[in-house]
Length: 237
Image 1 (cartoon, rainbow, N blue to C red):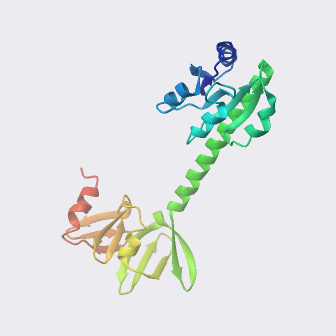
Image 2 (image 1 turned 180 degrees about the horizontal axis):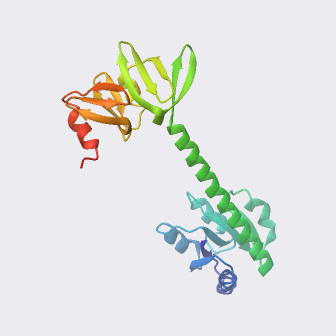
Image 3 (image 1 turned 180 degrees about the vertical axis):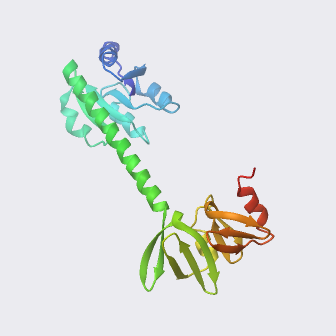
């Protein structure tokens, strides 16, 4: 984790810096005697953790936190313990160290910051996986029921009047909809409209001959206007 130290006392900064140097996976990027200088630095640089003194002239630690739109994790350092309750009203504050800072207490605070970071990373990863899974699903209304279809399993969609026929690897679905409407829901890197009545899964092409394409066992016409785009999508030798 990268960190910065903000404290108007040089000795206090030196103590925190020394403790950081003895802590694995913790690197001090900069030290600042006041919050104003730190704000300028944070406008151009990203840090994981801030060691922040509460009592500083003109601009307190709490004033500083309130200026940050997306604050990193913060460990407060102060000689006054009476602000502990106020401190934990801020989600970004992970711990509160009372000076003089003891090594054992320092290590505990840093460990708490690291655990918080791991939880946040895990939450982001989980959200990303959920989003990916959601992107692969398409829900269609059939007989007043919402049926989930795995989008990559679709290999052909055919328009038939006011309905579309969705063909998948396991089952076919007839849905009251238009080709244009479903086209908007499909990933463009996988599907291509080759005719005013057909959308194909490009990965399922078996072969192409003249103005038609074979998708599994279905022969699908390719219109003259859509043929150039189809040819651009193929990995031609």
